[in-house]
Length: 222
Image 1 (spheres, one colour):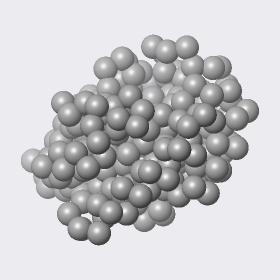
Image 2 (cartoon, helix red, strand yellow):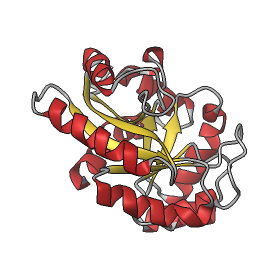
Image 3 (cartoon, helix red, strand yellow):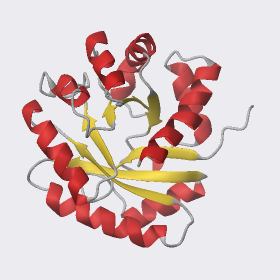
């Protein structure tokens, strides 16, 4: 198999929302799985954004001093009214979040209709996670605004990976593979990420680009 490079995942939850681990343990476990960078993106809405982001920024700064793995402070804006997304995404960036993810219209949760559209129209959003049965018109907006789609290894959310892959390819939207990890066993290796991309319908060449080149694009711009 070709050299797959170091793993980069932008979507991991800590115990600051519904994850099981402290940020320090996330970083340590990710390093043990040959990660080059890991994004801690806890669930936020207007009630907790200003509490969580500064704490994740603080721990990321401390961990990054040691140079073993890059810890990226982020958020996942979750189950908010679609009209609130631009305001919260902008505020998250102002507080120091390097990655803003929006919890997309997964088919397994009652996410508000219009969430995908609001996310892809917002230039402060970086990644739309598990966007479900997303429309081609929404994908075209995502491409125009430089927003990535997430292919996920998470149970349930992954049920629409095939549709997301087809739509992303048709609209030429960049894709990343994230784990949406909540527990230690949810973290995936680079080889598994490669397999998830292929299993979603991408070619081997496309899968290599998705797991190596596309994360590098995000890292460069943050």
